Image (tube, rainbow, N blue to C red; front, side, top):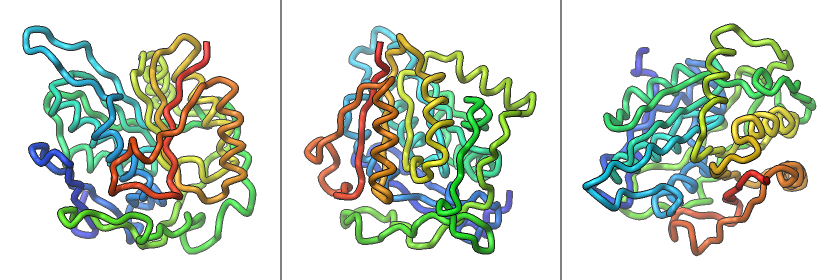
Length: 291
């Protein structure tokens, strides 16, 4: 892939001993990855929270090898959150697996970011995962969910004033109005390759599932919830970590009302988050599957 037409941004960790991430974006829409081609504010807030969170373990002994830690990200987009987790695992000497997933049209950019930010001690991959195909539940799209333009659906422009980066941070916030070129399919059929990949992912006992800024289309709630229930089934000990920026609050609360039928969850208070990288409009939750 030619990267000359792509922009890139650097994500610096609070622990400067950890190598920064370089994340490619596609603001021009060359790869037609839509909103998944842009770094959104909620992803940065979530990554910064995970840097200081006990949810990612640390190796406390050099004599024994800690058990593998398995992480799955849904709707990964550029992959910035999952890539940050992989770097944190490597720095803490935690072996394991990080799988970043999204729809087919997002994968070229996502794979490029995986290749650009290797973690030799962590199994890091990008995989296709379509919630409609996995759950067998069709999307219920409303015309109001999209604003038609040259490339179709658009996502609300990110507000550069939401976050105030430290003087050391050189990761600017997105200001472009990103577009999503490929509307979710309502078909429940999937290719043989996708079905095999999905089956493989559903058979893993995930320790953490990440979901960043993925609930802005209410028509996708049912397939997303169906996918979550399959990935973290009854009896699962894995944690679901959600970040989202408030856009359609009533609809978003409907999502959490439905999520609450199968998951317990609590909100992450501002004092638990990075003191600089947080916003009144961005919410974080940690969820656990109900028995």
